[in-house]
Image 1 (cartoon, rainbow, N blue to C red):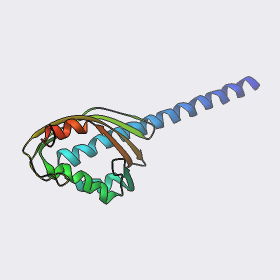
Image 2 (cartoon, rainbow, N blue to C red):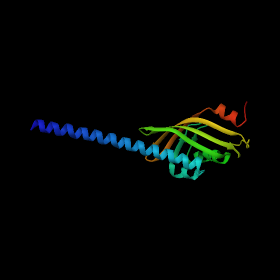
Image 3 (cartoon, helix red, strand yellow):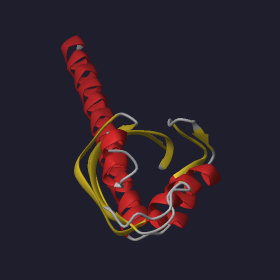
Image 4 (cartoon, rainbow, N blue to C red):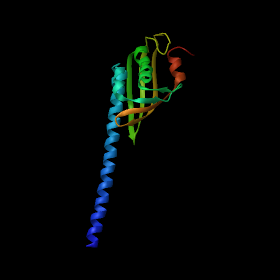
Length: 160
């Protein structure tokens, strides 16, 4: 009887661990699919209002200066949509670990509109970068982008 109880206990524990691991993997996969979709809609389709449903109200973009709140974050990304035509945002690789999502991306476009106050230059850009985001309960709560700002500014003709 003791052996039977031990086997049942161990089996139950293994099942619980496997169940938790499967649940965690499912959340990570859902976060990847969600996060990839967000940037296709926002940048490629130009629908910045989609961020109303994607961002948490108190989202933080770790930029300089730091941006806090959904409305400020939407205004930040609206600059990319209004500043560039022929936009292509390509996710080259994306994966999740826990509540973090990491994407390696490429952004292409033509600078045909105002971009953070910079008048259109007509130049084309092609930059690559990486973003680390935090997704909690189906909402983006934090983001930090890394890309070569110097190369970006060279490509739009602001520096040589």
